[in-house]
Image 1 (cartoon, rainbow, N blue to C red):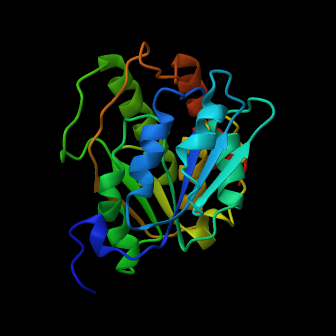
Image 2: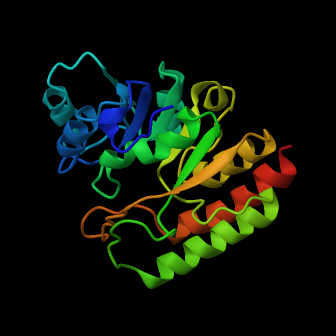
Length: 241
């Protein structure tokens, strides 16, 4: 296999699933950047009943690109529910998650795809904490909470991940479509981690950049979600097997 140095070196092979909720300010720009990446074979955008004009923005943001599938939930259900909808519509050999804000950089898709395309991995986590790329400096207690949740998850799964809560998760399509997603909100992250660990598939981590947002800029996760994540670690590693 020839060396992959950029997205231009990768043939189209990727279904990007993008959950969206009240992201009218950024979603058009994110879609433009995603569709500009050569690996992208399909983009599935799931609007989770936005109320800020996001759905109207989506009608023009895709530019009529045939690779785009737009889906709208009539009632707000949460990120996990939007991903459940999106995964069911993915058709490319590889499936990944892309948030609709500007925190994660689609020009780094090639880094995440290398372990899968080289036949070494079935699932890849993008890690914000492995030291590569630019990282915006933000909330200290968020980083503490993230590290604690990742540690508890690792203790339960016997994995050694550095960033369980990362958005960038990449799957062989047959892996993600055999998993039933039960969580409707941010509990998806520990749930999917527990379920791929239980499958005994090959999991890799890849360093990524991170351009975090403040709450004033639209960040949505909060401390309630942290407590739910703790419960999900217990539930999906010990109570639901």
